[in-house]
Image: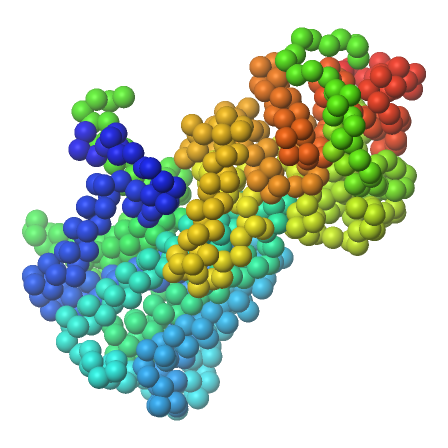
Length: 354
Length: 277
Ligand SMILES: Nc1ncnc2c1ncn2[C@@H]1O[C@H](COP(=O)(O)OP(=O)(O)O)[C@@H](O)[C@H]1O
Ligand SMILES: [Mg+2]
């Protein structure tokens, strides 16, 4: 009975509508935030920050972006990598060509550009659904791959096609150590999570979910399908674009178009499915799982004395992802987030099983 | 068969309520609707007056659901027109009908399965909310105040329909009868002028039907909502409706008070011709 609701009476609708309703949840999130902001910086070494935590945070942002579209609005997209690429290259070109703009504004404008392209590629969703829509969003992926590989203007005519981000200077705060980068990504991840959570518990989020669950019924209560779907594409692409900027500027530093290939789109899709469709928490869980699993597969066999080749590890990785996705889609479409919730409910009743 | 009326709590339409019935709210005029070769509706005309409970009856496949679909913009008839509050409605989409004050429920429940009872009904308030995107994202200003205001409204509705205990339950987990009630709540949340109910009591047991009848009468009396409902249970229809339209094979068979319709030879013949009542 560690986790229980009894005795906690909510006396107003405001309390009942809070993001974290239970005292245990409030304490839990405070502890997690304290660990993330203070504990980890004190303990983590550079490798952990650089190779695991920073990519994890950025991919969490990307997963939230896709989750808003897929998990909340029910519109499948295989083009998240493309919107990340558009964000990254837009920010690069803005920083390069309009040096007067502050970097933060570059980032924001890059998000808006990604959002605009997202709306464009979201237009087919007004007519088609499911598999056909997936194929249409795949077009965004191929288009981005093609544009950034073949239109040299985007990569500033660098012969290799590889570009380098400018120094991360935010109004005089130069972000260059791994720890500073970690804090920056953490700030963006927290901000994205809060804004996304607010949206999904507001009118706009409810209109997305209504479209997801039954578009006909959504329309009879006055939701315009076009507005709902395109706004989901816009917000999702904005967030994905932001994740792309962070991935390129903060994680990679210099990058090639390949950094945002279809692989990236699929990775984010896996995160959302395994983490939990329609859950902000799930986006973090999915990102954590998919970032940590390959590292675990690399280290664990060695610890028990088994040597696996790199190729074998990456095959294993895909086999495990594949199997998990099938399992989750069949048994728990709400992913790890739902398992976590079930666990909490069990704890609420424990030790009495009813 | 039409005359059997089981005991029920709700009294039949009272003279007092009848007086509240006003001018024509909606008129369908010479509506014809075809799907390829199938004539779903042929030259159907009738009207719905402000404040009344109007029943639409007829055997399966008579075109009743199609009629509701025409009224709220799902289907567009090949011929005929719809006059809403004295104005001819242009060809419109369902969300435009919603904005114009027409709400409905479906024959097969059309709830948002992944959302809680509360969220389902809150979606019915979407047209009442004005908060900008920024206000919603930051949960400030109207983004927050509207949520609280509408929540209070929805709570009153939950109370009225006696479903406060399931407010946080995902609707997919609710029994059929309660789902129907949540769907009614969602339609009522729109504060419609005209409420279209497609077989609101189908598949319910007697007790659930009596509850539903009571709610429909209460809605009509307390909020003055005009109701058009499709129903198979004749005793229900005869008890709660002010006027009845009878459709058969897409054509208007009869139109009048329950008593007139009940004694109409054409109606009796049509109903004796089909297995169910
Ligand atoms: N979308 C549609 N496409 C084709 N035929 C339809 C469609 N909707 C209704 N119909 C046909 O119209 C006729 C009337 O159907 P309906 O309005 O559902 O009847 P009721 O509600 O009275 O049982 C039926 O023959 C039905 O098959
Ligand atoms: Mg029907």
